[in-house]
Image 1 (cartoon, rainbow, N blue to C red):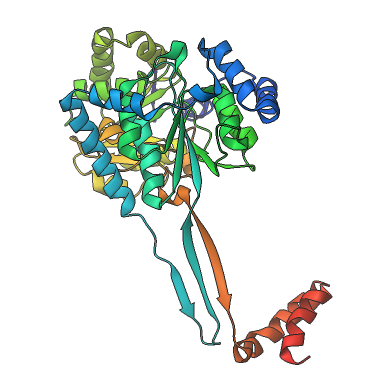
Image 2 (image 1 turned 90 degrees about the vertical axis):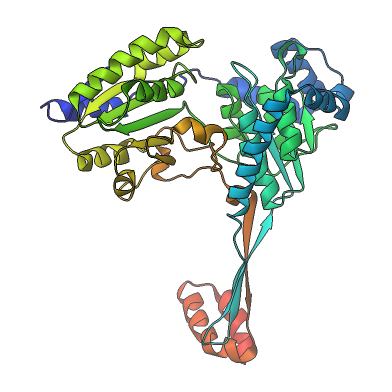
Length: 429
């Protein structure tokens, strides 16, 4: 963990170094992934089966790629009632928030008599990738699938790696609750390839969403254009603005909640009180050994954690906008006043009783968010990722007479005579 103070003469270069810290994987996998994609495109199911045996230690046949309804039924039946209720509460809240996002179509007629507008339609099919490596994430199933269903996507195909053939029951239960159409027991770049190109057993989709390892991220990058993707997810991150009114232990646990995701995750505290900064740092040290994932969280905190002391919250807002964090917690007496000035953050959590962790599960807004400072230009997953816009125009002869001559003039200025003539012929020219 590094400690910075905005009043120190060397603060700016130190902060720039923090901004520039490389947390993405340095593993070069582009050629390997390109080979896997080409192989799946050429051999379909056979290639997917071969890679599954190689990477997940599971021998499949084409008829076993799809998880059966009976397997899902058994998984759902085995979920403890309290956990099933929690899953349902989360799903209900996520669905309500995303259904509220659905946009209305637009139709207008202007003074020239031209009618124009915009119509929203859902994608036909979406592929959802669910990680199955270091941990299982049923919450990610809900966050990715429910917006697609709310948007009206008819087919949602999910791929989840099952190393040694082990299926996580709660992931299957989440898929059932979220309305997933098909579940395939495959992962890695081969799963992305199957969703993008299609095989005899897996029909191609129009968009692929969901996080994964370096191979999955690179595969999504390479199939973009053939299909749409959500983003290339990087390590998770949180910035916590906290004043001395907070319990240092609570803030320490908030920082560790992000650090336990991955060794490359980043947790940053910004405060206006040096004594409080010391107390939080000490609380992190005390709390770490009590966590089951202490090795991961400790590595993240040691390599990428930071505590920054500022003189006022105006300075803090400036630093936040430069960091453009995935998650921003405003643990302040008046969080709304600071939030009003923040421009760049993926999701913001306001007040001492609203930690980021509540957003991961049950708040309602999506937890699939822009990482690596991309909140400067990107947004979190929403129903808009599963919708597309089609514009339309309708013009009568009289309306064309009003706007057509300007179109002819512009087309001729660009040297596109057929364009000009296409309009002019309808003007009697």
